[in-house]
Length: 295
Ligand SMILES: [Zn+2]
Image (cartoon, rainbow, N blue to C red; front, side, top):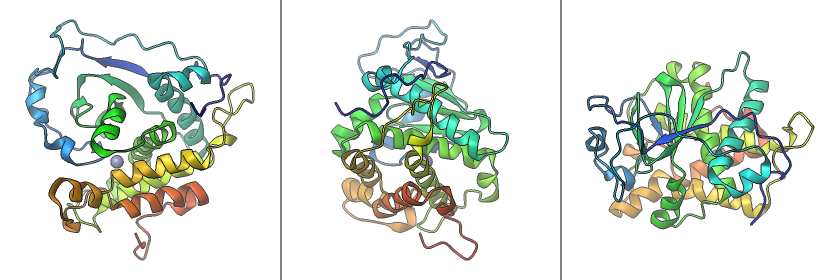
């Protein structure tokens, strides 16, 4: 396995939690309002609201004991290289380090690893919904089994750097929330030129900017958390950006492309903005552009 984290990097300061199948599901009526999902597509064809009432995913045992589950012990980069949960926890540490250097008064979001499903202020989190950011609670939710769905349903490589790109994208939404970008550019519907698409492409760019700078971020001992990504790993991230492009998903599900219903941008755009951030940094992430950025 290609290494992403330096094995001896210290990620023990992570504050990632895990909850899911043992958490009591709240009653309905929450609705999926205001959440920023990583993609909209066939996965959302499931009746997610139906799950809010307490439905269980296939093969799951009903359990009413509630509470936060024990998160795996994630102390080192080696843990992050061997456990997906710890990779998410490690990403949280490195993302907080990066953004605390770039946003005055940065306050980190809460990262929750979802096991099966769990209720949030933005509706039920599960691998069917995919990773998302919930603005009112400043929370990022990721069920790592989503990466397996990406492989099986989308033919994605969904390797380590792709996973980090996805976490970085959700962090990007948190940055947009706390810096006012979201409130300055409220949701004005779908479409290739919509605020929603511009928000999503900027989150891709933020993820790229973080990964482009990632080798400068070190633990307290001066050990870089991550190793310089290989070209193969960059291609892995670009592959993820490709498969979640609106046009790609639309072609897969309906056979045609309708830019008026775009919510996240095309495959080419998602790759372009990730690359822009990766190569040119945060300064290249203005997808709103004073005089109309060329998306
Ligand atoms: Zn998003």
